[in-house]
Image (tube, rainbow, N blue to C red; front, side, top):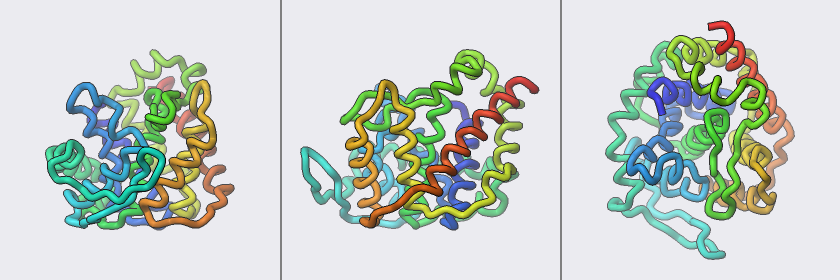
Length: 267
């Protein structure tokens, strides 16, 4: 994953947090799936899987914000179990190793993020959860994402978009500095962000969309279980009707696809 793609993740997470009236200083947590760079066999895997988000998020809050969630619930082997963070575990070590690197990437986003890029990362677990999930949601444009492992191996991706623009053409041209910088600026300033959303419902909607984008298809029961498990981590146990947020996600995906195509063709 290229550094300029990291900055794109940060800027888009920042905007999502803004429309949710959440803590924009949590944008740094959108970088957490990048810990999968090491070791090679975890590339785009461990921290790109919703099932592993509790350990990733709780570790990151401790490393970046000195906020300790001593115990949390995790669904394993058919039931919920109380867990606590082991500072010697893989994910805690990787987040700690990448702390300075991630902090430097956030600061490199100064032109878009303004003064918030240099402030201490947020301690708010809900805002951090929005940023973390946004990474794999937006990654559906980059490459297929197996977000629902181990319950389903079916990957989620923007299949129609790739078919229209040509996947290889997209990969060759989009990640040049001039193209992606133009895209990043145009998306950051787009009118799509002139709205207000509810963070828990947005989280639910992003997971629903990843289920919708799966091929050949993921059973909704699996999608629903991931929604419930992730929201439980964030202490949300109420029913959420995602009409507005789901519509926003679909419109955002359409906007992103159009802007990428325009930037590829015009730069």
